[in-house]
Image (cartoon, rainbow, N blue to C red; front, side, top):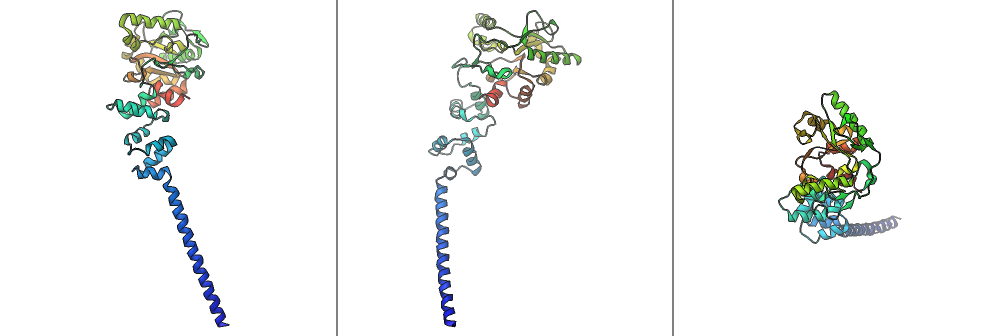
Length: 318
C-alpha cells in the first residue's frame, strides 16, 4: 500500500512538472508574441526614433496613419513637435506650416500657425472662396472670402440721426438694435458713440476702392480699403464710429474709444482690425471699425485676444 502511494505521488509530481513546464513555455510564448506585436506598433517605432513618450502620444493623437509612416522614414522632427503643441494648430494645414516655416525661418512658429490659418501663405485675392452666408452674423468677409455681387442683406433698417451722422445710413436690424443699447449705455456714462459709416452696396464699395486706387495706387488701396465683395460693410453688420463728426480717424485718442475697447463685446461688437495685427487682417489698424458678431462670439473673441480671422478659421469654419 505504501509503495502504491509513493508511486502515485511520483506520478503526480511528474505531471505537475510537465504542466509547469508547459505553462512556462506558454507564458514565454505569449510574452514574445506580445513583444513582437508591440514592435509593429507606431508607438514603439516612434520611441525608437527617440521621440519621448509625451511626444509620441502627441503624434499619435494629432497625425493620421499616412503622416506617421512618412515621419518614420525621417530623423526626429523637433519643429513638427513644436508646431503640434501650438494652441491654434490645425491638422489640415500641417504641410503648409512646415513649408511656410522653411521659407520664412525668422518667423516664430506661433506666427506661422496664425498666418497659415488665415491663408497668408498665399497672395490676397488669390483663389477666393465664397463667403458662407449661412453663418449669418458670424460670416467671414475678407481678402480670401468674398460675397457675391448679388448678395442681399436681410432685415436692413434705417439708422436714426440720433445715432449717426448724415442721412440714408442702414444696418442689419439685430446689429442696429445692439448698437442702440451700446450707444445709450455709453451715453449714461458720459461717452458719445455715433455711426459714421455702415452698410454699403457692392457698387458703393467698388467706387470706394477705385477712388483709393486712383489716388494712391493698387497696393495702398488694398491696405486701406476692400475690393468690392470683400468689404464687411456689404454684410450690413459693420460700422465705422466716431464721437463727433468726420473725426473717426482720431477716434483712438478719445475716451469713447477706451470705453469701446472695454465694453463693445458686451453688445456683440468687436474691433475688427486691431493694432499690431495688420499682417493677419490684411488691413491697416482701424480704431473706428467695429463688426457685429453677436454677444457670445464677440465675448469669446475678446477673451481669446485674437483677430476675428483667426477665431473664425479655428473655431467656426467647417
